[in-house]
Length: 420
Ligand code: NAP
Image (cartoon, rainbow, N blue to C red; front, side, top):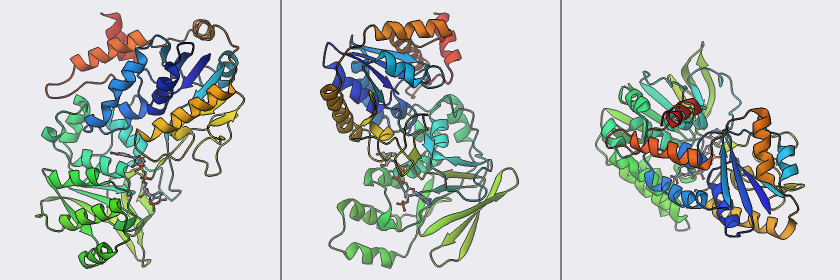
C-alpha cells in the first residue's frame, strides 16, 4: 500500500510510526517547510526541550526504510491534493491547525497585534514568521487568552538571556529578547482563575522567573472561597493553590499580571497598536497602553479547496478520520486544537486502523510518480538525507550553552549543503 501523509508534525509522525510497522506499506511524508516536525520544532517553546525530545522517536520513524520525507512541498500550491489522491492508495491530512483564530474586533489588523501562531512561529524561527519583528521596545505587553500558549509567550518574553540557556532560541532572537524593554506582561482571561486552561507545571515555572514577579488581579478571599469547593477538579485546585502562592511573592520591578474577567473590545492606534480597550464583567472599560499584543486564543486549519469544514469552521469535517474518497485526516486537522503532543498518538493510530480496514491497495510506483512530477515542475525537495545533514549543521552551529541554531530559510540551508 502507498500512503501519502501531508504535514510532518506530531500527528503525521504518529501515523507514520503506526503505518511503518507494516513492511508492505510505503509512506511518503510531504511537508511544506524544508524541515520536519511541525508543532514540535515550531510550536513547542524553545525552553521546553524535554517536550521537544519526542523528536528522537520521530527520527527513528524517519530512519525506517519504508518512510520517505519530501520537504519544501506545499500541497496544494506546488502539487494538487487531487494529484496526490490519484497516485496514492490513501492520503492522510496531518497539517495541524496553522492559522490563528480571530477576535473579530476593531483594530485587530494593526501592526503589533499578533496571533500566538505568528509570535510563537517568530521565536521558534519558523521561516513563515521569522521576520515578524515584534515590538519589544514597548514597556507593556498584553497577552489575550488563559491557555498554555499564553503562558509560553509570557515566559519567553520574561526570561533573561541566562534563563534561556539550554534552549534552541536563535542568536538573532536571543539578541532581540535580551534588549527588550518589557516590564509588564498582562495575561488577560475573559473568565476567572477557576476557568483558566493552564496546567500546573507551566504555571509553576512563573515562580522561578529571575526578574519578574507575579501579580494576581483577583481577590485572595474569593480565591480561598473557590478552594473550599470539595467538588473542584484536581487540575483547577492545583492552579488555584499556586495562584494563592503568588500573593506571597515579593514584588519585583517587572511584573506578570493575571487579569481576569476582562474581554478585549478594541485595539487602538494609527498604524501600530498603542492601546487595548477591555471591558470588565461589570461593563466598565479599561485601557492598557501597549505596543505588543498577542492573541493566544487558539488555532484553526487553513482551508483546502474541496475539503468541507466542520461546523465550528476550525477543522476539516471527517467521519472518524475519513474525509472523502481516499482522503483521511488526523490530529488538529481533524479535531479541535487542544491537548498535548501525545494526545495525537491515539487519534493517529485510529485513523491508520480505519485506513487499513477500508483501503484496498491498487496504486503502483507512487513515490516514482511523485518524483517525476517534481522533475517536470522543477520543484526542489529536501530529502531525508538532506534533512539529516541540515539537522547536524544546526546542532554544530549552536551557540555555547544552546541546543541548535535553526536555519530560517531553505536557501540558507541549501547553501550550506552545497558547500559541504
Ligand atoms: P486553549 O488552552 O484552548 O486556550 C485558549 C484561551 O483563549 C482560553 O482561555 C479561551 O477562553 C481564550 N479565548 C478563546 N477565544 C477568546 C475570545 N474570543 N476572547 C477572549 N479569550 C478567548 O488554547 P492554547 O493556549 O492555544 O493551547 C492549545 C492546546 O495546546 C491546549 O490544549 C494547551 O494545553 C496545549 N499546549 C500545551 C502546552 C504544554 O503542555 N506545555 C503548551 C502549549 C500548548 P475560554 O476558556 O473562555 O474559551
